[in-house]
Amino acid sequence: MSGQILEVSGLKKRYGAVEVLHGLDFAVAAGERVALMGPSGSGKSTLLNCLSGIERWEAGSIVIDGFDLGTADRGGLERLRREAIGYIFQAFHLLPTLSAYENVELPGQLIGMLAAERGERVAELLEAVGLSHRAGHRPDALSGGERQRVALARAIMHRPRLILADEPTGSLDSRAGAQVLDLLKQLSQDHGIALLLVTHDPATTEICDRTVHMRDGRIQEAP
Image (cartoon, rainbow, N blue to C red; front, side, top):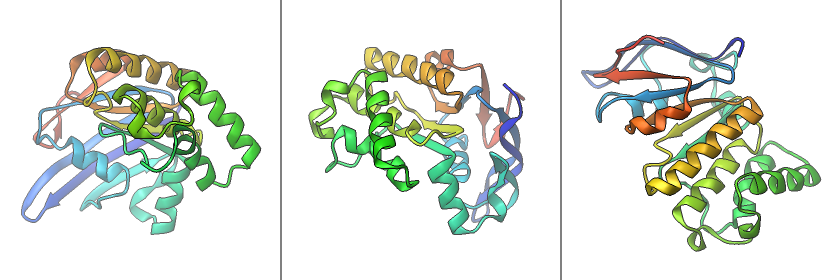
């Protein structure tokens, strides 16, 4: 690993009079896997919303892949999301009218990947997550574990530098969750993708290189 893919410095966020992030400082190196743990209300979701550009903050900076989110306009943020970041959510967020193949393909379409390259890439990723035989099925015909594996393949379709994963096994049973975590680790290693994994589950942190703890909007254990 070399260089920082994510740098957070002095980050403060408030809702009205209530400050929920109190000057956070941490970084994630290129290719590194970091777990972010903390109880409900510790500020993890707010931090993730700031990192993805959904919410603005009052002070401090966020730099992803050399791109300063604080100075970006809407077009710049959209490009960053499409090109440099992959997302995995607890609730999958697959498009219900699209097949597994089409859901995985979508990020490639958004960045203008040629059809032949998209087809190769989707086939490769569906095979990697063990779902080639389910390519034509829509999400409602897939199990929870299968949906999350489709979401994982979709998250790396466009070759991002960083994946933001929000409780990716929270909706799965222990067996399916373990399979998704093993795949997430393997794919991040194979493709050199950094991972910031938000979780409540200590077992989930086993695929990560280190763990950062949050409580009451503060980092308790320095990276």
